Length: 126
Image 1 (cartoon, rainbow, N blue to C red):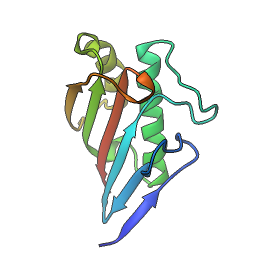
Image 2 (image 1 turned 30 degrees about the vertical axis):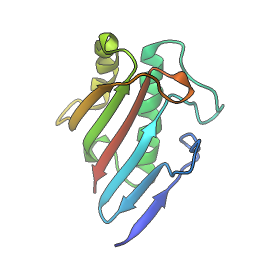
Image 3 (image 1 turned 45 degrees about the vertical axis):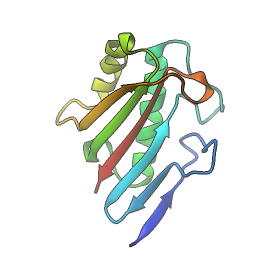
Image 4 (image 1 turned 135 degrees about the horizontal axis):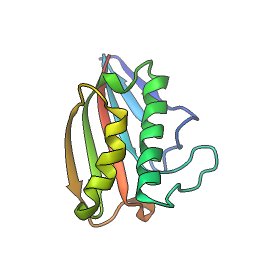
């Protein structure tokens, strides 16, 4: 199996022993992204909408580095700390998938890295 590691400086560096993404054949597995601004290394967490946009920007940068875009995404997972705020996240998320959105699940969790409110991972196919 051909496996290529994807790491771009246009998305936050991993904060543990993992890579931003792995391309295995034509399938890209993107690690969960939290709202870290890659230019500053700081959290972009003034609002839940800001957090969600930053997660999506980070994911978009990784997709771009792998010569893909959001149209290539076939599956995403959203982890949130408060399911009551799902509509706020969904409003932002939907702006990135205006046609043919991918399969998705949303899971409420007790906590996320750096105590953010949202983390998103994706799988894309070339």
